[in-house]
Amino acid sequence: MKKITSLLSIMALTAVFSTSALAQSAPATVNSANTTTTIVAPIGITTTTALNFGSFATLSTGGTLVMTPAAVRSSTGGVKLTSATGSPAAAAFAVSGEGAYAYTITLPTSALELTTVATGTGLKTMSVASFVSSIGTSGTLVSGSQAFTVGATLTVGLAQAVGTYVNSGGFAVTVNYN
Image (tube, rainbow, N blue to C red; front, side):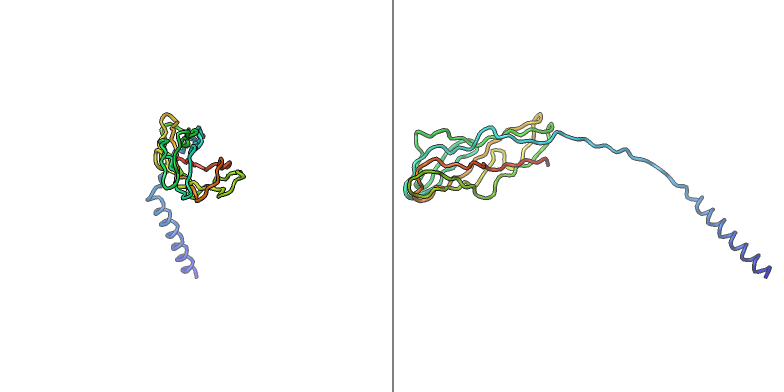
């Protein structure tokens, strides 16, 4: 029994010392890294001019009136531009934010409805669609700001009622940093 106890003691001591020797042969290395972050100015957008297709006359055939981002009007079908054009204008926006950051522009992808309270007969709604920006779908701030314009296409229906058409809710233009 004494031999077995001695043998077990030797084996235990060998295991302890060999484990300690292995642990000491590969010393641990520690390093650290700094952590930083920067909060930038939030991006913002302001409407500076509303989209206004101006005045026009219509025949019974209907058609379209296009307002480009450069505020140039054109018409198709029975839509006839008049010399008393009202105040046609492309919508204008001012973007503000951080330095020279890049951003994306999201324009409406579905049609917007204009309505009238005219008491005459005929169709009392028109739709606006195909929104397009003067700078495409992205921009880069210059010293923290940039301006752009938006045009669209107005669809005029058959027998459109005479009157002033509005969409009091406007249309959404969204900007986000890249």
